[in-house]
Image 1 (tube, rainbow, N blue to C red):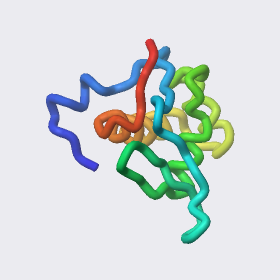
Image 2 (image 1 turned 180 degrees about the vertical axis):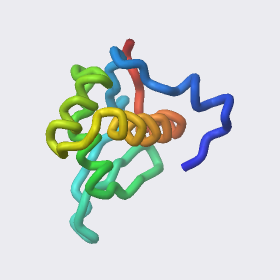
Image 3 (image 1 turned 135 degrees about the vertical axis):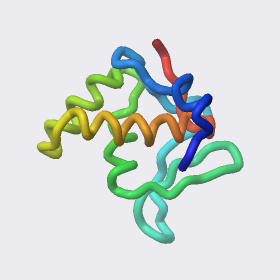
Image 4 (image 1 turned 135 degrees about the horizontal axis):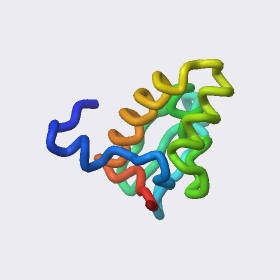
Length: 103
């Protein structure tokens, strides 16, 4: 998912931002194909294991920094690498209106 360079910085999450799924957006089990799907009004995105792991921590209470720390601890990976990957994923969702952020 590629964003125009002017859009990406405006959509990036700061460490203290608390991402959440806006009204009408939810993660559901896909009983037909297995796995998880992110549903929004008139749109859907199939989630892989990584997307599911990220969104399982998006609850509107945990900050972006806390989500990164939790994922880094769970997967024994460097926080800097996790932060970049999660930032790209969440910015993509935010650009498509699947994600909102509370500062």
